[in-house]
Amino acid sequence: AKARLRELEQYDLLLFISVNAVEQALALLSQDLPQDLPQDLPQDLPLGLPKRPKLAAIGKATARALCHAGRVPDFLPAQGNDSEALLALPALHQVKGWRVLIVRGVGGRETLAETLRARGARVEYAEVYQRTIPKADPQSLIARWRQGEIHAVTATSNETLQNLYDMVGTDGRADLLATRLVVVSPRAAVLARQLGFRQPAQVAAEAGDQALLDALLRCFGQSPKP
Image 1 (cartoon, helix red, strand yellow):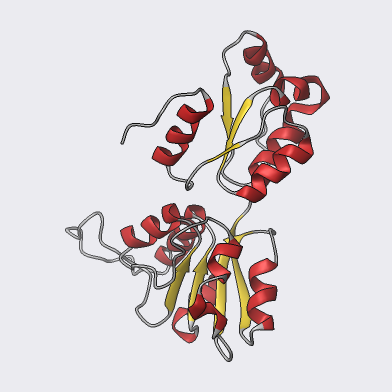
Image 2 (cartoon, rainbow, N blue to C red; image 1 turned 135 degrees about the horizontal axis):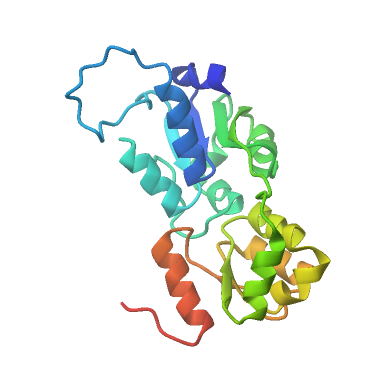
C-alpha cells in the first residue's frame, strides 16, 4: 500500500472508501515527511494529497475528511453512501484508460473494481487498515444488555455489524437481535434482516455523527432537530 501511495500522481483517480481510508492513508504518507520540518508549521497544515489525481469519496463523512486534508472530492454522490451510488455518477461511466487506486481496508466488496474494470479502467488497491474483532470479553457487554443499559446499536459498515454478531456469540445473540439498530446503507439493512434482527434497521443519511444521532432519534419515535 505504501509503495502505491508514494506514486499518487501516476493515477487518474483516487477513490476513498471511508474516513478510516483517508486518515490511514495520510498517516502512511506523513511517515515520508522530512524529520527536520520547521517547528512553527500550523498543526492543521494539509499534507500528503497531490493535486494531480481526481478524488472520489463514498459518503459525505469521507468527503469531509478529504476536505480537512486539503482536497475537495471531484466525485461525490448527492444521495447514497455505497459503491452503487458512486458508480451511478455519469462521469464514472467514462473511465476507459484511467488508472484508478482504491484506498480501503483489507478485504471488502469487489463491486467498485469489477465495474470500473468493465468500463475500461485499470484498477489497483491500497489497503491501509484492517478491521478486526475487538479482543474483549463479550460477557460484560451481555451483562449490560440484561441490566437494561443498552437500548440501540450503530454499525457503520457490514463488517462492523458482522463482527459484533460474531463477538457476542450464541449467549448474547438474542439480546443483540432484539436491539434497535442504526446502519448507514440499505445493504447493511439487508444484512441485519438476514442475521435475524427483530426490527427493521434504521438507515442513517450518512456515516457522520449527526446523521447517526438523527437516525437514533427516529428509532425511538422522535424527530431530529432541523
